[in-house]
Amino acid sequence: MLTEAVRRRAEELAAEEKLPAYVYDLAALREHVAGIRDALRDGPELFYAAKANPDPLILATLAPYVAGVEVASGGELAHVREVLPDTRTAFGGPGKTDAELEQAVAEAERIHIESPYELERLAALRREADVLLRVNLAGERRGAALAMSGPFGMDPETIEQCRGILARAPWIRLRGVHAHLASGLDADAMVRQSAEILDWARAWLQDTGCADAPEFNLGGGMAVDYGDPGNRFDWARYGREIAALARPDETLRIEPGRAISVYAGWYVTQVLDVKKAHGHCYAVLRGGTQHIRTPVTKNHDQPFTLIPQGRTGPQATNTPVTLVGQLCTPKDVFARQVPVDHIAVGDVVAFSMAGAYAWNISHYDFLMHPPPGFHYLDL
Ligand SMILES: Cc1ncc(COP(=O)(O)O)c(C=O)c1O
Image (cartoon, rainbow, N blue to C red; front, side, top):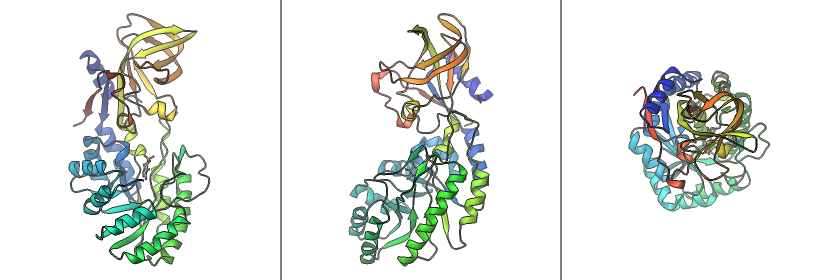
């Protein structure tokens, strides 16, 4: 799991007293996304969801391998435009303000429309725009880590209101349908869901008179297994089966985030204390989940590798240990009751799978501990 390059950098950072730190392995990211790109050589188009990790060097590393970037706010759009001025963008997400709609019209290639009211407000700008309507289909998303039920997009009844609005606003070009229905689906489930979206969307677009070269954005949500990091999404199978679903005049597009960048990031820190409380062993680490909120939001054990150091001070042998941070809340837990051979003050802990929804979803100012440094392998 822990590559030699990351281990070396982690040990250097420990020696230089520069922990905690994020280490992004850009060489590994490049290799990973090149593999995905290869698996998708017959389609669909691959956009990267910037919300997973908008770090400029992550974006720049991905740029040669992706067809574009999906953004979900005016802030993300401005950021991506600045980092990758020539990249194609699609602007989605609920609650777009009027200012964001104007920005989207000016700067995004596609706008994903979330509600009839949003479409009305876009129409009121009287500017040319290329849109996909976001549909929210009901149905059980078996095996999903997160089902996007709720206020995302429009259900099949509500989306009907868009027909009239589009008819009155010929400056808006309806290009197709967008759907992001769930996260955490394996290749099989993802293909089944995509077929369901395509069936519905083709019929709807036909009825709406948008049958020419339609586009279908099938969303992201490709599964990532934090409990078994080696269990990767089967891109080869997915690519083959999705390509077979497309008809010749159609463009299929996807916008995954997590499954692209998650494996390239590491949160590296160090043991400050080892102690027992009520029969449980705890290792207190420098930093905390204010730097990597992922294990709290997903309620999982963040996978990690221990890199032994001096073995001075308090230590524990052959015992389950709970790894916690420096925050004064019982929620500040990286991993619970994980068996270790040995853990000691000064040991380095490298948390893997920290390249997506990690730093950028974290409440890092809480308690005002020093922020992590950022380090990049293979610049
Ligand atoms: C509309 C949309 N597209 C794409 C994504 C990316 O999903 P993931 O990072 O799970 O691939 C999300 C995530 O919430 C989303 O809401």
